[in-house]
Length: 88
Image (tube, rainbow, N blue to C red; front, side, top):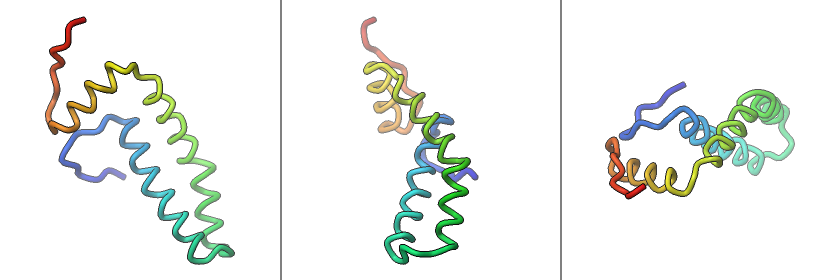
């Protein structure tokens, strides 16, 4: 499921962003009703599939160098494709 965003996220960024939204919804559901078969079913389905994909995507993002992270932040903040001008 893709959502239109003002910036173009790469695959790992999109997976992590959507996972954080889904997990927050599940956490809210647990806070509202901590003993719910429906919520447990949704949570189990999430953890058994998309949750692991989000962990893998976060590992990819976590392997970026400091310079890559800075460049990506500049790109995202500018909402454009960023051509780094840093000296190598």
